[in-house]
Amino acid sequence: MSTPVIDRTAPTEHPVLDVLAGRWSPRAFDAQNRIDEAKLATALEAARWSPSANNTQPWRFIVARRGTALHAQVVDALMGFNQAWAGNAAVLVVAVAETATADGTPLTHALYDLGQAVAHFSVQAHHDGLLVHQMSGFDPDVVREFADLEPRFVPVTVFAVGEFGDVSALPEVLQEREVAPRVRRPITESVILSA
Image 1: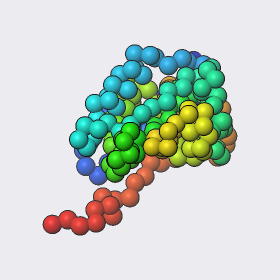
Image 2 (image 1 turned 90 degrees about the vertical axis):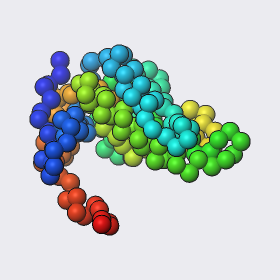
Image 3 (image 1 turned 135 degrees about the vertical axis):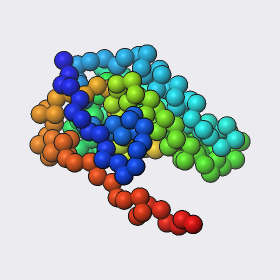
C-alpha cells in the first residue's frame, strides 16, 4: 500500500490551474501497485492531442511496464541515482523525437513538439492521480540498440510513471530532495524582453 502523497503545491507568484501548481516530480514510487491502464491510456491520449508544427506529431514513446524485460532494459539504460529509485515506478516511458521524415527532411521542431507532448502527458497523469518524474540521466545509445531505432529517431528523456511510494525507501540524499521546498527563479529572470 502506498503512502499518501505529500502536499507539494507550488508557491506560485500568480494563480495557475491547481493541476499545474500541484504537479511535481517524486522519486518515491510504489513498487507494488500496477499501473492503472485506463489512466495510462488517458495520459497517452493527452500526449497524442498536444500541438505540433504542421501536425507532424514528431513524438514516439516506448512504454515499459514494471516486471517486463522491456522495463529491465530501460532501467539498465538509466545512469547514476536514477537507477536507485526509478525501477520502482509502475511504468518507465522513453520519449523519442522523430528528427527527420522517412525521406530525410529535417523536422527542426521535433524536440519542442516532443516536450509539449510529454508536458501534456504529465499534466493529464497528475490530474488523474498518477505521478511522473522526467530524467535526462540515461544512455540514449542503449535505448537505440534495444529498440532498434532508425537514426532519425532520437531518445530524449525517460520518465517514471506510477503512484507515490514510501519516501523512507529512498537513499538518504534522495529522501531530503523529496521533501525539500519547491523553488523556481522569479518570472522576471526568465523573461528576456518584454514591451
